[in-house]
Image (cartoon, rainbow, N blue to C red; front, side):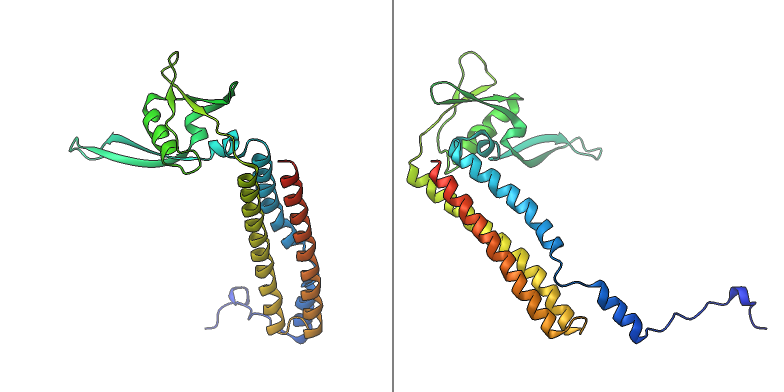
Length: 225
């Protein structure tokens, strides 16, 4: 006995040339909104980095606060053995201490917990950017003192150029990812070859404009040193 009409499952509609044409109309290879949006966080990251380099270099609180500190602690095991287990975690310095610039080319690290003092000291000593022994404060056993070493203008300029070069690479990577979509649409014949070529030219113009912007940010940062 056949199932009632209400229980029958209708077959999926077949794809017609009109459906394919409608799908193609939904794709606009000249719309670069997604790529421009992707540039946003990239630009914000490197602009902040250049600003930090222009105002204090590696001893800028933002740069110093990003220093990775390796912290190990001992905790009781979850089982009934009563054994202690070692837990290792990495934290940015800014999460373990308050960074306060002082007068006389000194930076104060107000450590949140005594257990962080030795890991912070080890991280500062091991870092090629700082490579110094933080001094303990005589007045506060949770305070470490760093001596700010003046950087040569040439060294800071080199760091600026390294940052902007990485910025350019990130932009190119984002462009390449978008370009792959265009090539995929062309391969599937969703867009015509002529339209794909036009999109590629416009994409290059967008990248050239972004590169010019980065060149300007680099020049401005170096000029401010």
